[in-house]
Image 1 (cartoon, rainbow, N blue to C red):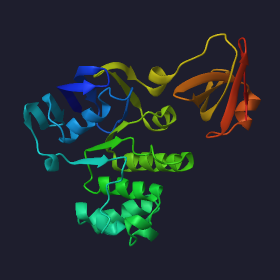
Image 2 (image 1 turned 90 degrees about the vertical axis):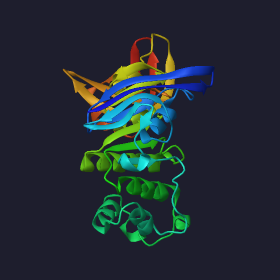
Image 3 (image 1 turned 135 degrees about the horizontal axis):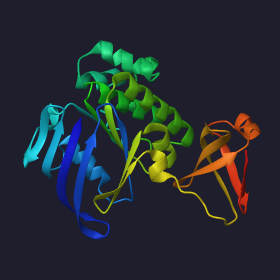
Length: 283
């Protein structure tokens, strides 16, 4: 269990504010931090990593990371951190970047195989694509077999196809190593795919805490509308089928027919339209 109870004064987008977070996270969970820019999400990650000071307490299992103003050194926390900007050593090969963290070739080869990077192990970072660099960054974060993996919008610079591929690989590594993962993201489809739990911050305080559907799902009223979105999931609820669709920064839930459920594919871009209370979905 991870117990977080911290306080830090910040200067947010709307002026001075207090970041006050009290959370309990079960080991092995995947938690997404959501909310507007300037709400304190990245600062919370940096406090957990030991990169920023705060008051309060952080306890992971039987180890104290923060107590009052006494803070455990970053290198003793067994964390992995994945940034937006990759932060690779440009003068080292892919394999050397991994072994710099921990000289464990068996683990390095396993990670490269899981992320389909084995053939690129001798390549230099400047010869890799953005998606390949981020996969190397993810592998490097896993090299010390972290108790806690922290990710700050790691896929925001990638195109949709590569984002989906890396989301699958992040989930694979999370399950393979049983690591507790906390990720900052503004993408509802990404959160829905990856996270078991969403914690939404606003002006330094937790305003929502629940499953992705509980926190992000917003349904429309009776007005007519027509929007394009990505089909994330189709679930059978009793005798009906329900589609979960990402539209902009929202998730919507639409009842569909059995035929539509059979013909639509997860990941497909669909158009959601309605007349009064009769929504229709078109691929």
